[in-house]
Image (cartoon, rainbow over the protein chains, first blue to last red):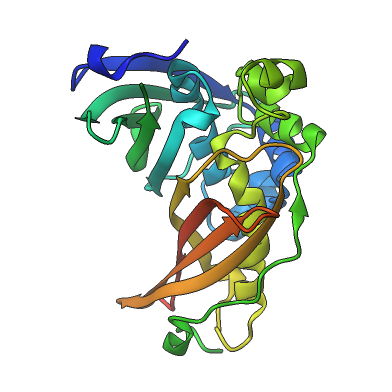
Length: 140
Length: 150
């Protein structure tokens, strides 16, 4: 079931999710996406290019962050537009992993176009890792 | 070694990629990797019940196909982009419809902007993806930051 546009109010939180990322998540995403950059699975390579540790793929963070909105909207076909800026890397500890938190809020409603703009706040710990993250959702 | 991107690539259109056949198992694998719990992305039956011919790809699946166009850009010696200096700046997907297993997608990339920001260059590339009927499916837009000498 999809939410109805007329039931939404700007500022309302429509979805929240905590997403654990482990090194396993990164290896799985590397295989699924075809992005085998070793900074996403090798500590020695990450260190050699001056990174604080192995990083999650930015596209993994972006891909995982929209899933709460996909579920709320009633499916991926509801998504009209999705944009983000990669502002800070997500360091994934070999033992403890990392934890991403997503808060999805109604940013703008357009009854004529039949769309809701959902703005995401995406953090790892206290750091905001994605900036200007907006999803345009088509709703009835 | 040149550290600046060739500004002349702004406006350059690269040849369309070979058609990418979207596989059901690839969609399921990608959906699991991004933590999708949408049944329409993992079950062909659930997808059909929702009115689709096969499993529906999560929104960011389009990057798998876009990657083939970005590879053209990075392989273009005239562009002068050193991959080891590239950082992903921002990303956008604009959909006409969702990608579904069975689609044959062709992507055509245009370099829409090359800018300098101090020692760094910012290259924006827009990859328009169409289905076998030639209809627009999604456009993926990336801005790559190419780090110059510090």
